[in-house]
Image: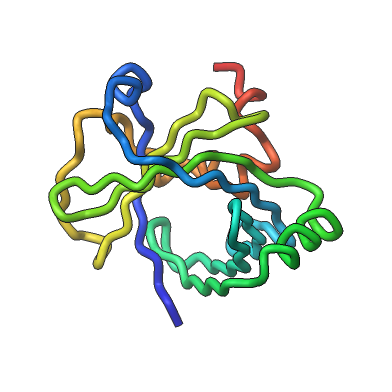
Length: 157
């Protein structure tokens, strides 16, 4: 069993725009199951497919299982079995020995940028880059599965 310990933060758009960053990976994903405690998702990039299962342990930790699947299978599963999903470009940026995954959302979630950091323990200390702002780990609206149901464009912010 894998365990994902992750914290989420919003990103300052102005500082992000000035940041030199590596090439990102485009993802499209859809949900086969999504509720407060569990998700089953299919994700595709330009050349890979993944099946991912998560089960909530705490606000910060989840049991996680991820398996590579053939890209064509991923495309077909997305088209045949998912009714909602999200689309984004993910950038991986190293800061003080940790990798930050920054998701720049598209479509109905355009305008939302979320940074995630995976940790070894729930109380692990880490350095926040200056482009990271408010922590939203405890706000369920920012999970990808929630964004597929209630997209950012509907929040009226």
